[in-house]
Every structure is written in structure tokens, then in C-alpha cells.
Length: 138
Image (cartoon, rainbow, N blue to C red; front, side, top):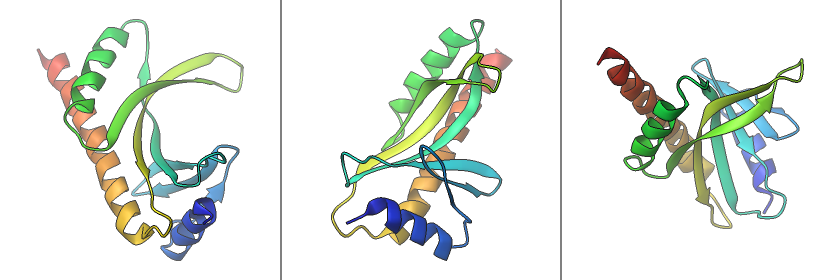
């Protein structure tokens, strides 16, 4: 089974217009970016992510960590964490990413997995941003 090829084919057939990146497969849905990460060492590892949904700074880092922990404890299969990336000038930027991670069987039905994964990622993003807004309002 080549899960990466299956994912690329599925996304193309569903009209997502996927494209290869150094990390895996990128595509958009409803204006949001998604990344499917390849794992060459584990053919059954399925990880779909929403990258960089919120910037982390020194001023908000403690709040971000607290909110991520709360959301991680309430949503199935989805987890939020921070990732460090470099911008084009080489400056380190940290942001919150949302991940959907499962182990797929040897004949995965991507038509069952991908729409639910996208919905859960969107739900995780929404829960995170809603909780941050609640904190800001207090």
C-alpha cells in the first residue's frame, strides 16, 4: 500500500487540487490550508494537519499552551501543538498547528477518513480560537 499515492489520487479525484511539497501533500478546502505529511518509515501512519492557525509570541505563549492543553483533552483524535518554522529571511516563527493522526489499515477508505479528518481539524481550530477569544474577553 502506498498511502501517499492513495491520498494524492483521492484528493485529485475529489477536486482538491493537491500538490507535492517537501513535507508531503498540500491542498486547500474552504479557503484553509491543509498538509498531509508523508512518513516513509510507516506506511500506515496518516497525519493530516492545518498549519499555522495562530502565531505564538512571548506575550501569549503561556495562554496558548493552556488553551491547547484544554482543547487536546476534549477533542478525539485531534491534537494541537506548536511548530517552529523559519521565514524567508531566516527568522524563527512559532505557530499553533492542528493535527489529525491515526493508523490506517492496509486498505483505507479515504472517502470515510478525509472528510471526517477535515471536519475534526476545523473543529479543533474553532475550539482553540473560541477559547482564546473567551480568555481575551475576560
